[in-house]
Length: 339
Image 1 (cartoon, rainbow, N blue to C red):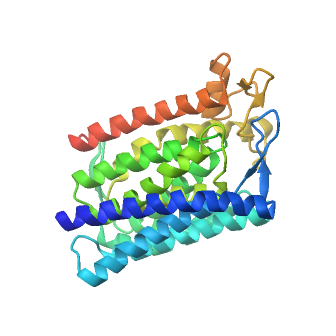
Image 2 (cartoon, rainbow, N blue to C red):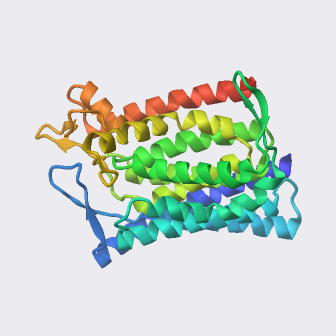
């Protein structure tokens, strides 16, 4: 177990140091190239660097490259490259989809989920070696056989990557909730002795930890789609490799609720092309309000049910909700309450 802990700590340290070095550099590069976006949640409409996810991806890649090198040089136990390499490939594909969307701005909504299906192919190939027996309340154990690698695994990657992406328009929300989710999954992986998943999640935690302080209110840099899709896919891959699907399901409840509430607008307006705007309307006091009469999303629900709520307070409340789900997930996993 000593070698596993050494690799996990190394992954975290390298990712943390790399992000700490890369983010300021990326900010300077954005400003030099004038590649900035408008912060729509601020009255002054300030211009902010918009592709901070590049630093996240590079830090993650540096970290896991070092782990693979250590594994090959010293033959450390616990890290399964047959699982790790396809996982990294899926994450890189999703990050590539994100940066392509940042640059080209895909006009058709389903394009990102379609590309996410393609990104799930490497994970589908390794899922055949995992247990396909699931415990379903009231129904008992069910063997999904080929349904798991062919349907469940792609659905996990598609949903988690896009769910993180669609609820990330407020300062600090993506890295904040991403930290809560990844730390929770890391603890579950540690309790289950899933070292490969631990390494991926440790590298993700290190990158998100530093990025949070640059992205929290008032944000100095945004992650862009490259950052949100990267983080979402890394969370999904870590959960799949660690066989942590039940904790992941609990952790994604706020995002599932957000997605369900968002889809109400397609019913109300009788078109699938409409999507509610994530951000709210800022008044002169800095309070943020929903522009809709109905709650088209968890963010709008909180805005409508709260008085004089600022963007910072909104993010903190969403993080408290996510933190509550994290506690429940840890209790269920620790005491094996899924059965």
